[in-house]
View 1: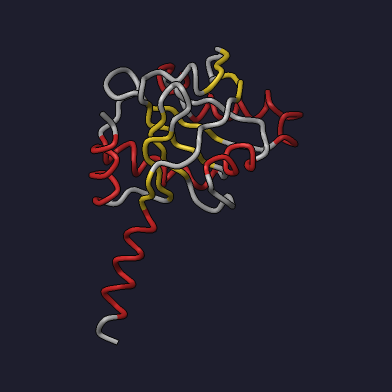
View 2 (view 1 turned 135 degrees about the vertical axis):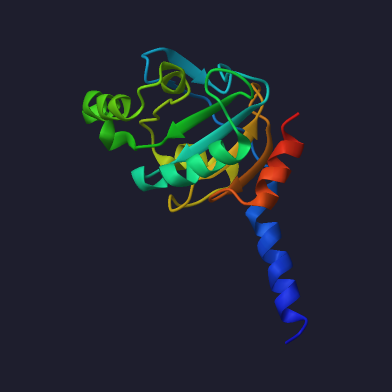
Length: 167
């Protein structure tokens, strides 16, 4: 029993941050200012921190990373938020995008929010993820190479690991 708990803790920590895997898929969509982007080619930096969220309630988890890393949409480290809302939602694209614009008044942050009207599997499968119950955080190069990834809200260990991967 004494060995089990430390082993479980170590495995849990290893499970939260994974080595680079897969290639970020090519996808084209518009940011909340209306500019079209083909990712990963048009990521704002090389590398870029990429937050992938699937549900509105996951914004707090994304924000935990943004605040922990001290990210500023006007300057500093390159990052983007990619809400993946699904193909069916594309029929309501205008309503969804306008709703997000109302919630994000900062034009710089709108430029970093690129809504993907695609199946979550388009993003998840090539990266080795499954499900939509947690956010994904990645460090991605413009050629699609994923340098680092994890899932869930920010932790001190995760923030340290992301900073080490983001060079």
